[in-house]
Image 1: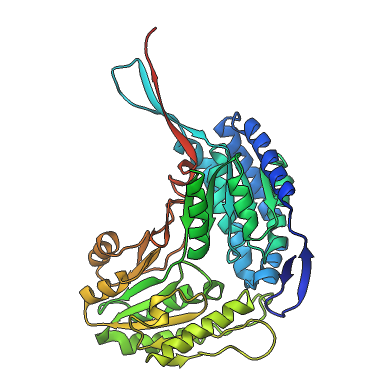
Image 2: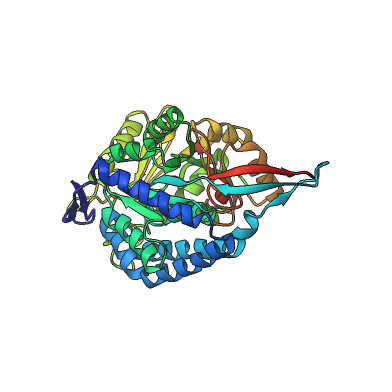
Length: 456
């Protein structure tokens, strides 16, 4: 059974029977039939449907936001913002997407040569629970605009959010089979990916899940996009505005209760300003105390799953045993729900769990560096390469470090990493490969076809 459990109370909200193998295959076949019609719709008409989708999202905003709060603990204000971001993404691609997919002429000796972007077919989307709506829409909207169909295998702990997504497309009067949801565990994703009608897979999730799906995709030679984990480093240099840096670093670490691949996780601070930065970061983190996610004033909700809180505590304990010091938090909160307080560790070094591993919760790790070069070295001393940040008043310095020195797919200066429909999103190293959003999102799951026309 797939169980929807409220992480703030531990109460069971609903149970769902997983789809059988025949039901999964039916969903894929139906999506393929819808694709055969959709691929022949002009891209401008597909874009117009995205505007209808944006309207349906806004009409369902309160219902969907409450589902996200109840199923994975997201504070209701963040959940509302997530739905609005989905609508924004739809509108962005409605306006700019057709130009991204337009034929591109190439001058050759032939009468005409051009590149055309043609859809592949049914794309499997294996999505996580932490942004139950945005993660899907940011992958699916460019893919659908390109003319593909999508089958969604969502995380097993948010079945009501998954079904709500399918309902939104029908409310927007899309073909009922162009986006299909399968309720299943990991085995369901494997069944769908192996189906001959599925032509590619996009996954956002853990490295373990990514390796399994990528390996299976390799055996059947299907294109895949992988957005995996992150342990984003933020460099705090000696000339940084420490008040500004502390505020944004705390926000990045605590949004979504820290359950974000692109959250700031390792704060690498030049030693000359470390003590002052720690003091300011401590003050900012104290403002993120957990509360009821349905209360509009709550900034920090519970962790989504009890086992996630247990795993986070093991990482904190292991880091302390290895020499890190706790300046704030450091232990689960008593009472019902999966609440974990904002936690600040200092003295963190390579070899400690808080440095080497991804901490998926509101745990900030301060790492000391002697100078800029050492800070960069520590930042890149990791298997992940999703996002990174630099805080400095010297914008030329920050630009140089962000563009040429930090090994990550998305780097920012004097800000924190946020996905944006206008910019490509993805990582390097074990943070995955391929890109969502921006110009590249609609072109990931297409046949980049060369056409040459000569005189008879």
